[in-house]
Amino acid sequence: MFTDGSSSEKVNQHEFVERPGRSFDPQDPALYHEDLELQKIHTGGDNHEFLFIGRQKFLKEDLYSAFGGTLNPGLAPPSTHRFANPAPLGLSAFALTTFVLSMVNAGAMGVHIPNVVVGLAAFYGGLVQLVAGVWEIALENTFGGTALSSFGGFWMSFSALYIPFFNISESYKDHPEEFSSAVGFFLLGWAIFTAGMTLCTMKSTVAFFSLFFLLTITFLLLSIGSFTQKTGVTKAGGVLGVVVAFIAWYDAFAGLATKENSYVTVRPFALPRH
Picture 1 (cartoon, helix red, strand yellow):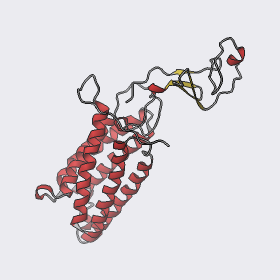
Picture 2 (tube, helix red, strand yellow):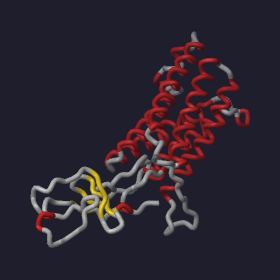
Picture 3 (tube, helix red, strand yellow):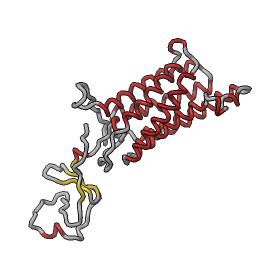
Picture 4 (cartoon, one colour):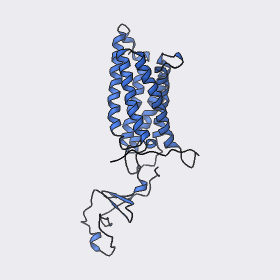
């Protein structure tokens, strides 16, 4: 788990920077020499509890570790901005919209027309997730900003397929097979993008990696289903999409639940880093 890192401090040219294998002698004037060469990244402290990155010194416990609840895929210092964590909002918007569309794709309760998801895709999965993505960028989280903003754009562009104003599906009314293939290309492109994002989560947590990995497979199945017009493949993508939605909700809950507000909290399970 992580803490709200606020104890980081600057290391100036006159401050002691501990070197690996070198003991600390406060009487040694050489340690405070202005031309002391700073190493890029190394540890310090009696128990190596500090991490020095360039001229900045951080307590290891105050670094954000890879965790789905923050959409941060690796070790990172806390943001210098005092904003709330937007990841649970973006993940919740993604989860609910994915859940509804996936239930339709799976043919649950005999529903096959996907238009019910248009409102969710345009406003919750689209607009709200895009706002959360921009917020992540303000918090200096490049991965989170890219992921949430991109998937917000996905949902808005998906909703446009079924909004008459954009005249997209209507333009294919005489060639429905071309529309299916075009949607297949659309979904395949998102499968490729998500696969690239998955590679950036391989040192994160099990739930975080699973979210992007299974979402890649979901996009791929839906793309194949659109190309081949085989309902069985689309249904498989829908079922897997429901699983993805619950994993996204799990990650959102991980970023929301604390010991102060809930009796139930989430303990992240980290993937191997070596």
